[in-house]
Length: 568
Image 1 (cartoon, rainbow, N blue to C red):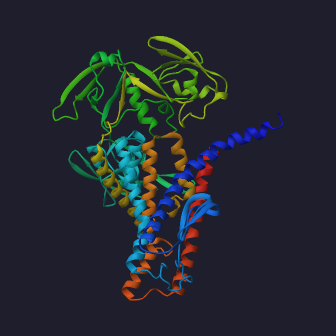
Image 2: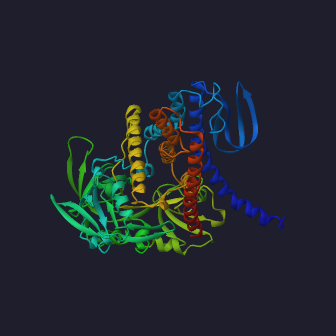
Image 3: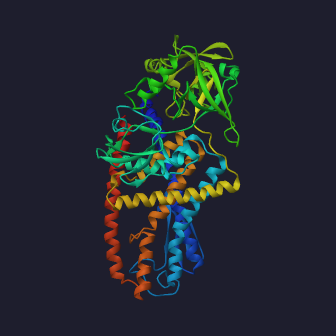
């Protein structure tokens, strides 16, 4: 048996990768399949003969013929295709039932039906996302990709945190500044702001900001960051966010002081909060990310406070009337655990809301947590926790790691540092009913459309390099990681977003795409006769070469990015 053990180990190590690939291929294949299904149904409706409708590509596994159509399941389950009679140049005889023999309106209907189904699925996916409810991951992804805002203060870009020695700080940007324009282009949402910064590394940008009801013009040069796809710019800022109490530990000092979930914290010691103060392990290593420095300074400011903190609180924020309260709160800290079900930590006995007090017998607090985690290796790890006032010790065995452990967790544990019994977060996410969810789905679909078309415009204008595009490998990588680490609403939004991308890209006037057919139809309508078959064939052949070249170009950078991730 020892002889076979290396083979078994290899198979077990490869299985998660195979699983990830399948999880990525299935939704992508589904989107292509429903696209072809749209063409199929429209062709049948229009009286056009469909020779083959295939689920997947390659050799036939099983199939049957019904009427004039062969329905088959093919070996490669990535999408599908529809083969219509007389569809391609050189196959046309003029017989009834051929694609080319149908009226111009019917041919256009068949061509548009594929993208229309993708667009419709995108709307339905978004409707479902808002219907089942947003989480932080899905709300963040939607905002980044579409510019959709879920809170009033997000309709403009206001600076919440910045590094004083970063590009923005050096350029004179201050906390609380609202970005009005960059290089005279209005900035109305975070997506537009991010794109401007990202695509202009090491270039002078003219920022117009609003500060104390006055407009100021500043010059900022984004810092250059390198990735496998090239260079991009950052200016080391985050946007503002109102700060709310998302959790209060029962019996804690905060609970005794009367602080409630949903309270908005406007000030700490009479200093306005522009962003959520994060107290997590990453802040103890400022070199990892520019946010470490200001977070560290913020923590020190609170931790060195003698006596109580003075919190300025607004209550009943969602109502028309507010209660403005001032509460004194003594400073204490605790590290609270949130444990993923069936994870390594859960199997060891650790539960949600256990308070971490030691690692391998050494006491730990907010400042020493990261250092304590760095010291653990592949040997058994002893975690001491406080549960309902009783100290307990649990042992995690790294060799028994569960495949249920999420990424960016410690064997399935997420840490949250509570300040005197309260957890601070951004604004609560809105909830939607059946009808408002549908309206939000339609609105987000429109924002997705404008975001994609804006990117295409920037590509054509040379503002964005094609190397930043993502092809099948990149999409598969992102999709598989999402299945491993985020919730249903995030995954479903991303699939809906890809579906709308497919709809729009297919409608571009590229000869081999659906939009190319529509372009030929438009010429036929204006010219009074179809584009000659020989001309169509040449144009399509040239387009195929160009598309393959672009595909290989994008795939190369997708592969470099994936290689970097695997290497690190």
